[in-house]
Length: 334
Image (cartoon, rainbow, N blue to C red):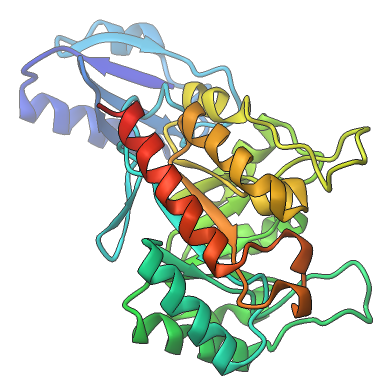
């Protein structure tokens, strides 16, 4: 339910209304829209009398939100959410580029890639310490040591770091990680999402292989309902009947999510295609469609990468792509 307030409301009346709503065991979130102030009510609002609230002097209108997601709903929060990660902004017309290797393999590797992507203009450093792999015999990541190396590389190059969490038991290891990534396989790990709701760090939530838009937003709702509003939605390709590419990038997800939700949206072109040669065109398409950022895999030697080498850009290819994307973004935001 949302309560739309009139202009220049009396603060005492507003405080009294919020206090009464909270007494009904319902949480109140106040949001300033372009035209009006909105109170978003989260919880069991079935017993709240809409007609009674409409009669209040400061109330313009009251509406029930039909969609099951509330906190992530644009009706609840009309203005775009902008997430600030150590002065790197995601949203509000910014193009935030997150880059780095699929998996951290050695100190030399992560340091080399970090310095290169920083020079090319990346805003954040990504790197996998814990790797979810289809085969139990594949490289599973450097785990604890990988996080230490990632933090070291981020600090050396003044880059916030992004890495994926696999299980609730790993939370303590992520205390210094700037952005915690939830992978496609864990998008509906609701116990993990609840715990991340108690975290202060931004959460990069990837869409599951077969997840609908509503299912993705409901996963975001689990995080937000537990207190963490800093959620970044990520499209990384979905599974379709097509087998030529690794997945199918759903570009329509960008404008759809902008319509449904106020949360920022970024695109992962590396996992979407599974082929390095497709990363650049998919990145350009995403920027043209209005993405708030990209998360791109970059490796110093893709042919010898221990994980996802075929979809990783060389450092030189990434530098060239960054020049293209910068020009395109500036052209679209004149």
